Every structure is written in structure tokens, then in C-alpha cells.
Image (cartoon, rainbow, N blue to C red; front, top):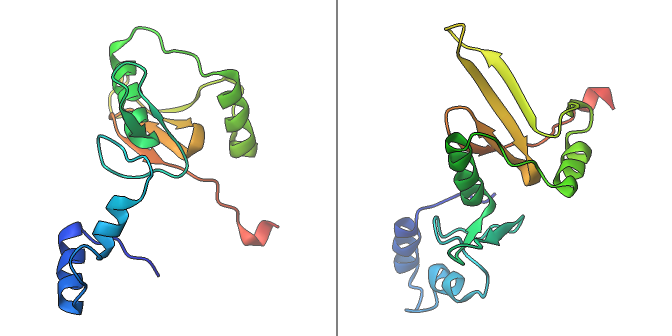
Length: 144
């Protein structure tokens, strides 16, 4: 069982256990030669990219947050690359819809408002409230 702990809790735990200075988990992790997101400092093993404008590496969730924010300011959305469309088709299986963008809409309280979620490549989910999350396809063990 792996539990998420804030850095201050890890440091306090290591001090109680008597870890020598510089040999605690936080110090070891800091020495690991992996890219960490400049926004959230997380290493994303499933993907991420270097921003072509500022050359900063961002995890897939922070990168997608930038794309989502830009989509609210642009008149037309950039189409997904063919490779990402094929990836979504494979990952979503029977949930894939015919359009390249996998955006699902539903009406909200007012007739003109629509809420939506959009399934993105690599398990990233956008929502109409500007949030970025994660998705995965779960199977029901009773259906085979």
C-alpha cells in the first residue's frame, strides 16, 4: 500500500527514524535524473512535454490545463492529431463516438447552458468548468 504524504510529513518521519542528513527519501528523489513538471514538480511517467514557447517541461495534466485554458479563449479548437485520435479510439473502445473530439455534452439548469467533458489522450479529462482530471476504462468482471 502506497500512501501520498506531504513533504513536511516525510521529513518529520525520517527525522524520527534517524535517517542520516542527505539520505532521506526526499533527498534521494531530488537526485533522480527525471524530468519534473515546472508547474507542479511531479514526474509524470505516462507523458508530458517540453513547451515549444518557453522550453519548460510540463506533466500531461499541467500541459492539458494550458491547452484547456487556451481553448476557452480561442474561437475554434485545434484538431487532434491523427495519432491521438487513433489512440483515443483504441483506449475508449465501445465508448468512442464518431467525431474526432470526444466531447460529451449535457444540458444544465438554463436552456442555453451546456456542461461537457472531453476525453483526451493518455487518460486526461477536460470539463466545462475549466478543470483537468483523469479517466480510465473499467470493465465489469461479470461481463467477461
